[in-house]
Image 1 (cartoon, rainbow, N blue to C red):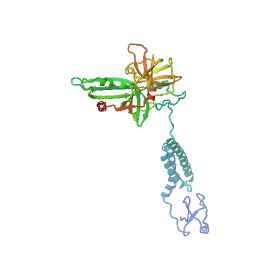
Image 2 (image 1 turned 120 degrees about the vertical axis):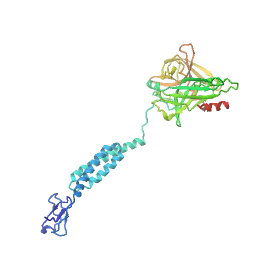
Image 3 (image 1 turned 120 degrees about the horizontal axis):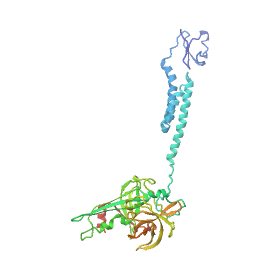
Length: 391
């Protein structure tokens, strides 16, 4: 049978009598569409629809639905999700006026939902990137002389992170038998700048006094063969000391630097919360933090026993006497004052009286605030040899 009409919507073929052929708006008997295509002659057969056309009718909304679902699954990567959903919407829209319009509408809705969801996710990710949330940190970013509120200081649970352990050793070359020594101490982080982490400790924790006294020659200069120090943080991370600094005064305070990129505040250490405005008297509760006899994280509690004045050629400072246990290895660690449920650093532990009980001493942290001149040197044997030559 010959067909002289073909529906432009569903492409169905049918025959219309010649008497009605002029009515170009005849209804399609299959889909009811008014739009039809008329052949050039009533008896001319319409070309049959190829199978590929039917496949495209069903396939385009199917691909659109699949891409819409995929865009929702890929919302963790919003850029990819947006691309998939837009592609799916384009494919689905091409089939909206065809035989499978209902299927195409479903696919379009799914793709539209994918666009909305991925746009929201992308905007949220962009806002987080442009405005990152600042993490809450109760420790000081460094030595700060401004007045602190009641919430300033470390919590008790953070005290263990406040002190790191120092290990050092050197070898001094002699004619017959080399001299060598190894030692340990404590230190606390007080600042970070230009990729370096700064720690405060005692000058005697550098081992320089023993090194200068080790020379057996007449020139008074030791032949330094090896010298080095490492810092082991409370988390166990070990870093070499890059340089050390000494005050331009006869005070047992020194400074160290290590690579700041290898450790993280709050995980490997906490900044010492110095407060220049802190006031304290005899009887106030304090806690010593350090590594006595390599026992890292030790926290003996006690009270301030006395405040004693000391004088150097350039300044006066206070020594804080405490009955909290200070033992070898505590040197250089922080002394904290308890203030309600917080702890602020008020001193650097330095010594004890051997043979006596409960007689420990710390240098008032105000020394650090008042010191302007610090002499720095690389913590290597080569740098120390050069320093000794220029003394």
